[in-house]
Length: 431
Image 1 (cartoon, rainbow, N blue to C red):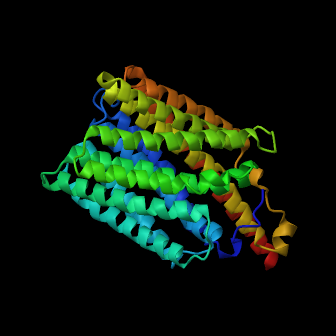
Image 2 (cartoon, rainbow, N blue to C red):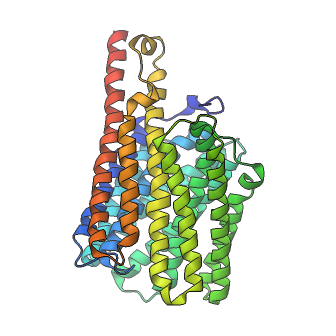
Image 3 (cartoon, helix red, strand yellow):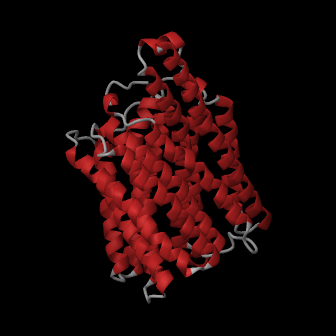
């Protein structure tokens, strides 16, 4: 693992990213409970209250929580520009994000307008603070690399997604007449295709070669991919909001998915060329994510050819993207990032850390736990894809999600416990 290119001296306190990582698994548990509370099969349609609530619990409470925490670590270390007042930013994003996600999901489950009215200001504060802080960090950064470009574009996409989401939530609460169908598609596209996809692309440029010991991404891809994806998303947004013909909207969608397929195939090829041919659970999380991205693209494209099955195929595509692609990569990254943070911050203890003997990265979280989680995640994804047609699969998916939340939470807190225990020994030696 080569960390020579990282600005490790500018890393924020370990408590900044870990507070996000520690809370995030809780929302997987809550999402599972929301699915289990549904009247009937929650996967029967894309707009069932339980599925909407669980989806936002995953995307806001879990995915956004991890992504915002990771970004606050990535910007100073990879881009070389720390966020201003990082501790305050962490508090002013994590607390309202968690409270806003709970309120929004409660609103979907109950249909209570007051919960929507509580959710959108909380989420607005969380994302506004994060976006301003991230933009200030990027503006001050002197580094010019493809990761910085991808992160900048992902933050811009996030701003658009949040604006649309707040408009929708406030509309639900007040009963305002809006084109909810078009706004919802635009919101989903900018949130998943923009914020999630672009951030994963940008982070992958660093994480895949560094942690998985692969060749670097080819320059022809890394220089063009993020700007091209963002340009297509902006075009798609304009087409949706102006009520353009479906042919043009479909053309923009095809272009997006073809670029996504290119990214997945190149990543899989790089992983096949890795220099250490040792079995690794986090690598397989990444591989599962890339295969799921290919599946999501295939299902979306087939939906264009089979209009009669448009809605179920698009639902399956969304499941493959969120649960298969995004969750696989985020969980795989967590199993690398948490041990790295623990090792790195303990290593900064100097001579006393060497005397105590700090754990290496593989000793922070047991490898066997990661393999069990990978198998559980793969099984959960499989039954989730079967759930729209097979009712028992819906409850199996909820159970799998519940167990994943518990397992991931245990893994993160295991890492925190190792850090605190070793730090205490270092401090005692210094007395």
